[in-house]
Length: 476
Image (tube, rainbow, N blue to C red; front, side, top):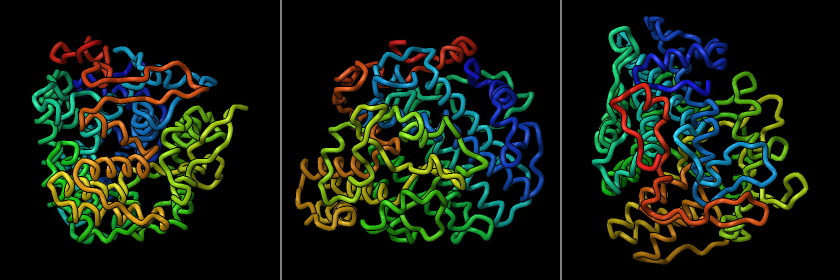
């Protein structure tokens, strides 16, 4: 597995499918071979489930993405007493052969391949088919958003910088040895938005009996939630506001109360009541990442190597329900702050699902978009809707201007911790990263300034070697 890269010949993706045991052995949902035909809605549904399974693997959303999203900035660190994972990222010493960068890149394009096959499938159209193809468009957009964010300069810094290759066709003999160059960051974002628009147009308003409001599938207004994130990262606050308002006004989603927050996170099952979760990837007893899971890496019943920084913990008021999702424990005998959002490591009947996007994020996006377009009144409405729900003792924010932006970003940090989003708040806003040092942490870089080459992951060296049209990022 470690030597498998995309070279965006997409032939490498076929090789990946044949070499990675988890894809070889899952049947269904991921057993349809790349060469297999998708002929019926049932085939299409199975292929969509397989696509979601590829996205949930350890080397994509299943662990690497959410860990790096909190480790590279300031929410977590790797204990000095560790099992050897994520040391290069903890110390910012990763090179062009970094395993996690290689895996995110290859698994991202493997998931894109699955989406491409679904989108290209020649199946007679009906509402089920429209829903399923819409999910594939939205999933492809999500994958490209992660790839362009990790492997390229932010849109807000340089939209004309090298992004990532855009692949929209399934592997076939005719395309097996193409070697595409990296598209511009702006072109990748245009494609992401185009895919999300296609998804929204295709999907029936109320979904279908096949995939309706279950959080394990991308619903129609979940597409707008993803789009709100895309526009926020792009710095297009007017469109971010429009997309987020669509979710608020038409999605039917709600927040849970403070006294139910711990139970919400302890629940290992998907939800159909539109509470909190907009989209998550299912991990069950039969289909999960086991010892390589995100929950196992945080839990002290597992490796427990990823610990919470004191700096983050100090941001929560004593009456904030979110503080209860972190506990003061120990790691192999040393005092430690432990993330308890993923508590089902030892659950014999189900495992923690991977939250991809939640309603709380949409409200924070809406608040920030209003604030950045000088509408402080509406910004405070949506910011306080979340903040007071999490801490009923909190009187609410009254800030304006720059302080209001600071308050919103602080709420984003507290609310979305351990979900892999923190890093991109630093990159999209082009801010220096100050990483707090812990008494029991391995030596790591404390300041990651704007312009540091390591703020962008390397394109896998094997990809560079195989595809002369692909340029490496500076500094690698």
